[in-house]
Every structure is written in structure tokens, then in C-alpha cells.
Length: 182
Image (cartoon, rainbow, N blue to C red; front, side, top):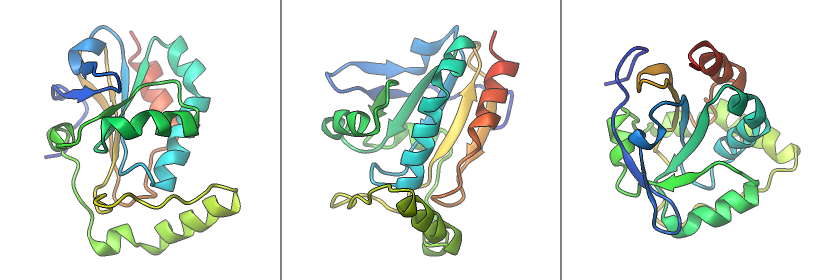
């Protein structure tokens, strides 16, 4: 069931490289931008994260933190962060417990291979973004989502991706952060 603004954010646990485990409680008292990616080879997800990285100074000024959750393995996360030059943490949820708790679903073939998605890949390639081959076993049908959780642990923004290219504008995320930053 999708989360709505004012719902209590579901608790979650995800693991960082190095073995540290994070939970929602680690962010209590601060707004949290919580981004679930599809898989590490998803170009629209990568582009979205780079846009968030570019806006990180403004997000941080509001007292907010950013956490990205992937269902890939912990071992793959550091290379991903380094390649995209991300300074915020990317955590692993290989069993997709957090994905399920936040109501993130899988898309149909038509959602995943939608013409708008294919066009987005063309545009990103023309911008010079490099395609990566999904690793064997990656679930290409998993959809992502973006959430802003306020300092009290309430959802104040929820965007459920309907296709791989369906990500909210970073401005909308930043509006939610600034409106609910303290």
C-alpha cells in the first residue's frame, strides 16, 4: 500500500560497505531524503542521483541527509558510489525488505520498456552517459521511489516510479525538505 504524506515512515535496516548497518532511527531528528534505485546499471537512476548530488549543498543547508538504497550487494556499492562521485551513503537491502515496507513494486514488461523510458536512455547516451550491463540476476522489473521523511519520522513526500525514467524533479524533493526541515 503506497505511503501518503503524514504516514509514519516504515522502519528499515540496510547495510553499508564495511559492515555498518543503518536504520531509520539513525536519521531521527533530521529530515531524510530516501531514494530507492532499481538496479545499479539503471541510467535514469544514475542521472537522478547525480542531480541530487549536485543539489546536496542546498539539501544539507536545510539539515537534511540523503540515503540511497539498492537491492544489489554491499560489495558492489563502493564502486558505484565512486563511479558516480556520490558523497552520500548507498546501502544494500538485498532481500528488499525496505522496498516492500515502502510499497515499491515491480513493473510490467510494458512499464519497463515503455517508449518514454527508451527515449530517456537515448537522451542520456547522447549526453555521454555510458551504458552498463546489468549483472546476472539483476531484477530489471523492480521500480524505484523517492521519499522525504521529516525529523519526526513522518513521510512528507512520496514518489513511486511508474517506469524506470519516472523520477521526481529534484526541485520537488528540495521543496519538501525546505517545507519540513525543522
